[in-house]
Image (cartoon, rainbow, N blue to C red; front, side, top):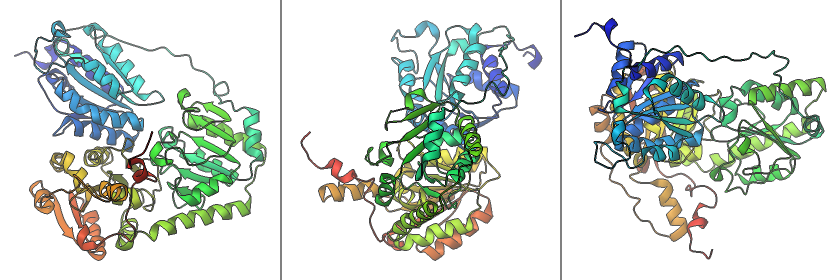
Length: 562
């Protein structure tokens, strides 16, 4: 056997070298005959921690959660064909949320690509499948180009608009012996004065003249690390701040000007009808957050986004400012400070009133669950990372009444797919081990990736799972009732979740009241070990008002002429 220093340099080593150069410290995935050389190279290099998931779908979600919580590149390694296909759904979520993620996947040996001869794990057209699920997909064509292709893929994932990039490496290429290439990029450095963002004077005038401005903050604010600049702009203008789901945390939600994630509420819609300017920053304006684009916006709309194609995609813009949100907001704040703009006290009072009104309206619907949200916010640290799977409790109050105070401490499935919360929370906890990470999930979605529970236990991650068990798909039950007056395929047989969790090395308990919930949450927070609290929703009792899904959901499913 050769000594380690005598081992030849291979494609796999070049891949790992580029990962280390990019600052990668953690990678997620499943080892396979179609990625073993990469895993071995990671082992030999020694600085990257490997997290072994139980499924490719979960592995991608973990890399996704890690990236969202840390702001770093997420890295996931999967197998070929079926393995890559298992990853595709979670890659779609990363694409929907604009998460910078590098997906390394194997491919069949290069002589068999596209032949249909039945090489193990063969897929008819894996590259097209990956392309459909990602921002970009590329295949390594020559082993000698490995360093350049990997570096380009990483840059593509991190370049705005950020997103997942898949890189396929045929299995015979992974162990190919190549030269250890020295690859350097040469850049022209511009002075700070030359790189200052340009804001059209007409746009500045519109802002100065506005008396009822509204800011709509999206995930782009957080991606650009522009929360400080956004808050400063809001305070200068005295603007109301609406946030998208992914924009939660772009301004502290206890700030008096923060309306929060309440855009589709009737009170907020009326407020927007009377606004005279909208400044949107890094917002996708998703259909489910705007009542399928029925939320009104002012005629004057200044849109700030890193993506050229975002301008006028969903709402007409008067001015489209394309670039880094932090740079643009900083330049805008500087312009406004020079003009001595001041907030209108009476308008700020209206903003405060709207903020209180929408929260009070929602609280009236919670019934016994009001104690849950208040207990969570009282017990959990201010910088707790709250991950929410798609479930009634998360949608109704977890995404609105549990206040988020810091960027990157709120994570939700942008694409709307259930079951991704558990592995996403594991990735977030892996990246932020000193923080408290809490998952809100329903029993239906939770079972999709339930096997990943043991991954968290294996790493001894102090994740807290709040599992709301109503033995079914609660959101769909309510929509079906409203649309058809009957239900189908929504009732599920729940396992004994406490026994299940204990078998996977969790401390677990089932509770049946708000008092018990608060008591057990305090214990779980202090424990700093994998913990699960199962909420018996039948015992706790129903909400004061059933959640019927997003506005207009039931009407959309009733028979109609098109």
